[in-house]
Image 1 (cartoon, rainbow, N blue to C red):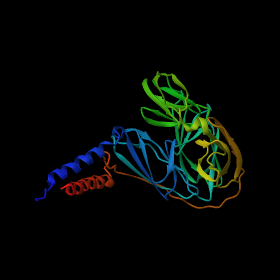
Image 2 (tube, rainbow, N blue to C red; image 1 turned 90 degrees about the horizontal axis):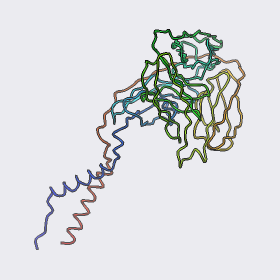
Image 3 (cartoon, rainbow, N blue to C red; image 1 turned 120 degrees about the horizontal axis):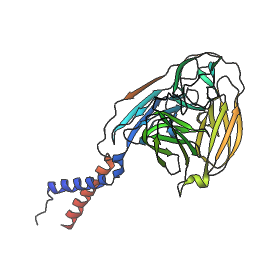
Length: 381
């Protein structure tokens, strides 16, 4: 009897329909995110997006479209490095970031820093060091960029020189706003600390200590503020900034329920004197002091602080679930030798993804299903 032949057009249409169905499974939420693809030389560096979400390079971060972020790199034996603002593109656009890390020089210097008035936020080479007064060690010889911020005062910026094996002292006086400046400020504290702060979706800093994080020189108006911490619900508020005023935010973060942090994890805020020491928790590198480490399993942990030119400092700490533990170590100086370093950063054009990609496995599966249908149909004949 004559055999029936399946119309190739029908087979093609069936395969196309199956692929479309599989592609439609991708969540629509993907249209509301952007990506930052981060690589480093050498690889396997600890990289943190906004001092908040951390992983080893290379890594793809998912974040908010059209927003500004900082990316910080840590690796044992290399200088920590924080980028200036990295801007994401439209939804489904990937920004590529490649950083070449510099080896730690054998000779470093120290910055003895205070301000008038005190308790000003310290940003050195885009990395937040808490508030004045502060002794910051482990700084490479050469030029560094200093930024001080305090509510009610103009931002103070300076390029300063660090000399190997020496302590550089800086005691700048901050200038208060003039009556005609029209500026206002936002000051943020969170409980627990370690939360990332965003204003208009742009990263502004992290609440790593009990003192406030200052967001300064703002024109009067309303500003959406979002405060995020792993395993805690996002805290959102609209800050109304007035000329000469400081909008005060004290965010009591609520744990996600269910979630690992309230039952099994806590956090550690690690400081050192001087600041800038490498942090190791149970022999795993975690970053540079001062720093709040989140998602630390409850129980006993070993904290090791290391810095070129100083003796190692070690201690044990017991982390309680759902709470923050403070650790502070004083490092003793030793004699060190001299070397040099170089840094570099390149940002590549962002490839555009208009839709979530369809995997090769999905396509092969669809074709396989159609082939099986043909075999079954012929056996029935």
